[in-house]
Length: 68
Image 1 (cartoon, rainbow, N blue to C red):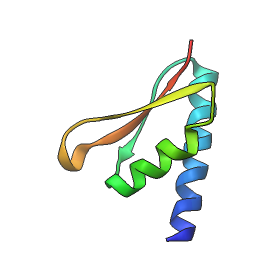
Image 2 (image 1 turned 180 degrees about the vertical axis):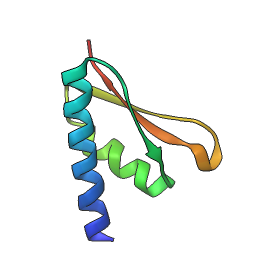
Image 3 (image 1 turned 120 degrees about the vertical axis):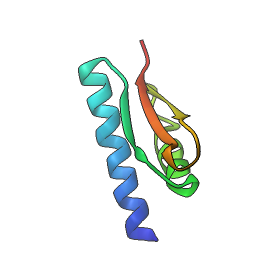
Image 4 (image 1 turned 90 degrees about the horizontal axis):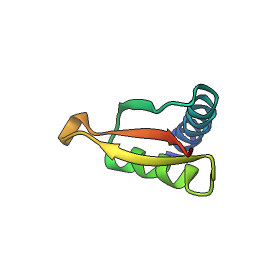
């Protein structure tokens, strides 16, 4: 569980960096509610990006959006 969380937090940070660098939204792979929550919490204090969950059911995923 802990290693999974570290991986997701690293994914969150790299996605945020990518979103800001490219100036566009980055869609992540579909995730469980637990995984999505980790991404949201990891980026909660990052002023450069916002996060949102999109999609339905098993296809629900996090989108990292750069703040203009």
